[in-house]
Length: 312
Image 1 (cartoon, rainbow, N blue to C red):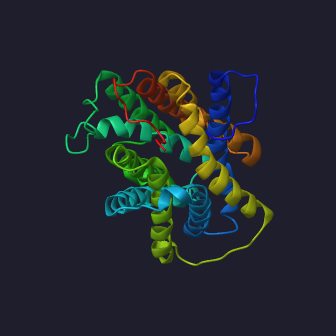
Image 2 (cartoon, rainbow, N blue to C red; image 1 turned 90 degrees about the vertical axis):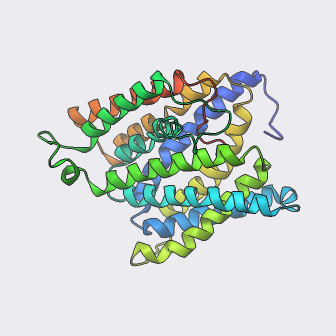
């Protein structure tokens, strides 16, 4: 991470602090976006957010963009499709479910990635097939998903009728983000990270512009909460946060990084409770706890060469 201010903290201590702040920002964005969707529809919000992030990354990485190749453009477009799909599902789902539900369900991306590597065609060259911890984590997480998203008395026959549309969209978001991470794992070794980061965000913005009419009626009120949400999500939670994480992971053991990343839905749940008044009942709390435990098992007992979360 360039031009860090002088500090008496060791690089490891500073990395812990910065990554914790980054994860807090990611968690808080669920609540910021949920509130801002009163002033702009989900797909328009995504387009504005990603356009601002793309502009910021183009400015920061402009020197790395002078020698783009056809291969790097294709890689950026492919990764950008998955990224845009994930964000479109996530924000559309967030408008229809609670911030806590959205965060915990989105966190299942950590579980889906190792499960998808069971398919040889999707598995990066240096990644093994999923092992017992990943399968155990997946089982716990999906049991938690059932409790979090369905009411008491749900049976197999009426399972899909009881799960809310927002929760289903959030689940599709987690699957899309898992595809995004696997695609990054296949392409990041062939394309310089500054190029890939900028191209995928830029292509995601383009795809969001193309799919904007699918979001229904457009409206926009430039309120302070919308401006704050756009600034935080585009500049802090996207451009700056991924840069901080890239630097921090060089100074942290993988288990420390994984543990800090699992706190994202926790911060989202706490923020939604204190600022939006959302709360989870006993059944939903148990479901969230099982999802969190499944994520912890998957992250802290990983395969020897896991596909990292947010690998930018």
